[in-house]
Amino acid sequence: MDEDLGRARAIVYDFDGVLVDSNDLKRDTFYEIWDRPPASLRALVDQVLARPGDRFSFIREVHDPLGGRPSLGRDAQHYIERYTRAVEDAILARGLKPDVPPFLEAHVDQIQLINSATPEAPLRSIVSRLGLDRWIRETRGRPLDKTGIFAYFMAKYQLTPDEILFVGDAESDYQVARQLGLAFLGIASAGGSLRSVPGRVRLPAPTA
Image (cartoon, rainbow, N blue to C red; front, side, top):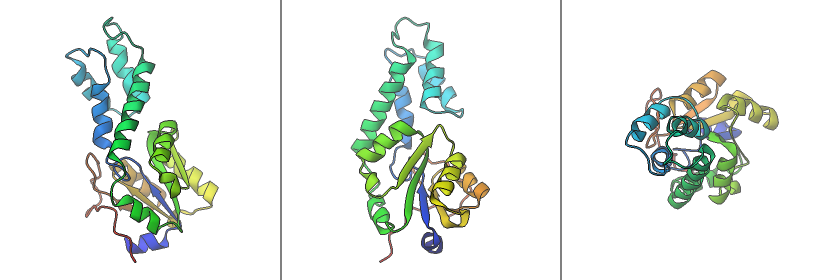
C-alpha cells in the first residue's frame, strides 16, 4: 500500500463512501422526497434502485408509474431538484470523514482527482462547499462513466496507468482498476459493495 502511494503521480478518489460517508443518506433520500407517497412506493423504489442508473433515471422511473396519481401534483424535475438539495444539505451537515483532510494534505505534491458516478454539476457544488478544492485538482462525474473519466485524466495530465492509484469502496471501482491496470486501494465503507479485495482498509494514516 505504501509503495503504491509513494509511486503514484496521481491519486484518484471515488467520492461517496471514500471522502464522505454518504452512501446511506443518498439511498435513504430516494424514499423521503415524495409528496403524499402511496403505500406501494417503498417496494417500487427498491425495484428501481436494484438496477443501474443515476438520480435522474431513478426518479423518472419511480415517478412515471406514479404520474397518474393526482395526489402527487409535481413533475419529475421537481423531485430531482428536491433530491439534489436534500442530499447536498445532508452531506454538508455530515462533512468529510475525519481521516480525509490529513490524508489529502499529506499528498499535496501528487495530483489528486475525483472520479465519481455522481452527476457532475451537483458533485462539483458539493466538492466546492466541502472545501475539497484546496486539495483536489479536478472533479469529474456523469455523464462520463469512470473508465471514460480515467481516459480523460490520463490524456489531460499525461499519466500512464502505472502512475495512478485509484481509491474506491465499490466492486465496480475495483473492476475498473483491474481493467485499466491501476493500483487500487479498497476502502471499507457503510453501504460500499467491495467484495474482491481482502483486507479493506480505512484511508491510511499519513506517514511523517
